[in-house]
Amino acid sequence: MDDAPLPSLLQLTPLNEVYKADPHQVLDDLRARCPVHHDAMSGNFVLSRYADVRQVVSDLDMLRDPTNAEEGALLQRRFLGNVDPNLPRSSVSSILTLDDPDHARIRRPLAQALYARVAKFRPEVERIVGETLDALEGEAEFDLMDRFCVPIPIDVIASILGVDHDRLGEFREWSEGLIQGLNPFRNADQTAAMEAAGDSLARYFTESLADRRRAPKDDLITDMVRLQAEGAALNDDELRINLIALLVGGNLTTTDLIGNGVRLLLLNPAELAKLKADPSIINAVVEEVLRYEPPVDITGRIAHSDMEIGGCPVKARQAMTVSLRAANRDPEVYDDPHAFNVSRKHKPHVAFGGGAHICIGAPLARLEAQVALVRLFERFPDLALADPAAAEWRTLPFFRGLERLDVTV
Ligand code: HEM
Image 1 (cartoon, rainbow, N blue to C red):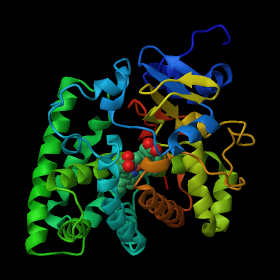
Image 2 (cartoon, rainbow, N blue to C red):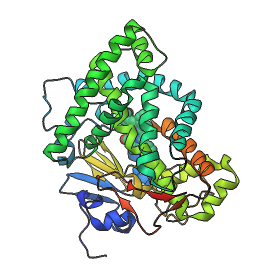
Image 3 (cartoon, protein in one colour):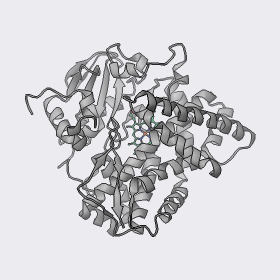
Image 4 (spheres, helix red, strand yellow):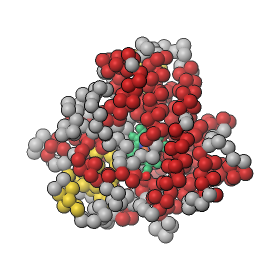
C-alpha cells in the first residue's frame, strides 16, 4: 500500500467498506507510513501512535471547544453550524467540548455525584442484568443486541437518574432517539428526530429538577440539586445539557462494549474458557475488550500553543484527531497487538481517552460490562453465535458496534 494516498478522516470511518470490515488494515498502514498525518479534508492532524495519542490526551492545557480552533479545522467548525455565537458556550455545549474554567466548574460536581452513585450501584446493576436475562428464559435464538446489550445501559442510567417506572418506556425511546447526536453526517430527518428526543428529555429534566427540589429522592438528579443548593456553581441549563450528555455519551458506547465483548469471547473459545473457569478475571477481560475493540474510535484536542507532536510541528489552534483504536493496537506498546488475549500483561489502553476529559462514565461502563458478561455466560453456558462468519457492524462514524448479534442458547 506504500504508494497509495493517505486516508482522509472520512476514510477512517465505516463509510469506507475496507475500514468497516477491518479498521486495522487501514490504521496499521497509516501508523507505519505517517503517524502524524495532516488531513486536508477535515483540517485535522490524525494521530495513530500510542505515545503521541497519550501525550495529546494527557496534556491538561489542550483545548476542546471548537471556537478555539483555527478556521481551517473544518470538523470542529461543523459543530458550530447552527449555534448562536452570542450564547455562553456552557449553555449550548456539554462538558465534552468545553474548556476551563467552565469545564472544571461543571465537571467537578457532576463527577463527584456520579462516582458516589456508581460506587454503590453494583446490586442495582445485578438486579437489572438479572431481570433482562429472566426475560430471555425459554427462547432458543434471539438478537442479543436488541434484547440484552441495548436495554441494560438505558435501564441502568434511568435508575441512577431516578426515572419513575411508568415513564421508563418514554425515557427509553428518547434515549435511543439521541443516537444521531453522535453522527456528524446525519441527514435532515435524523436531525429532526434527534432534536425532538432532545426537547422531550430537556422538558423531562426540567420537571424532574422542580420535583426533586420539592421532594428529594435517592437519585442523581437530587444529588445535583443538593450540590447546587450547597453552592456548586452550575445553573439549570448546564445541568440539563450535561444530564442529557450522560445519555448520549453512555448508552450506545456501553451497549457496544457488552456486544463487542460477547462476540470476541464467542470467537475466542480459549479466552472464554479462562473466564468460565475463573470469573474473578472479569476485570482483565473487560480491559482487553476495551483495548481490542473499543466502542469509540477517536477523540480530539486543539493545540494550546505551538508544539511538536511525534517530531512534527503543530501550531496553536490547530486541531488533532487521535485514533484511540490505532493506539490500542500499536505494536510498539502491545506484543502481538492483534491477538485477543485476556491474560495479557496489563498496559493501560486509551479507550476512555485521558487527562481532563477522560470519560466520566468509565467506572459505570466497566461495572455494567463486568456484571453483564459474567451473568450472561453463567445463565447461558452454551451460548453460541448463530452464524460465526457474520458480523453486521453499524455504519455510525467513529463508533464500532454491532447492528445485531444473533445467538443461540
Ligand atoms: C464503554 C463505554 C464508553 C466509552 C468507550 C466511552 C468513551 C469516551 C471517550 C473516548 C471520551 C472522550 C475522552 C477524551 O477526550 O479524553 C468520553 C467522554 C465522555 N463520556 Fe464516555 N464512554 C463510555 C461510557 C460512558 C458512560 C456510561 C457515560 C455516562 C454515564 C459517558 C459519558 C461521557 C461524557 C459526559 C464525556 C465527556 C467528558 C469530558 O469531556 O469531560 N461515557 N467517553
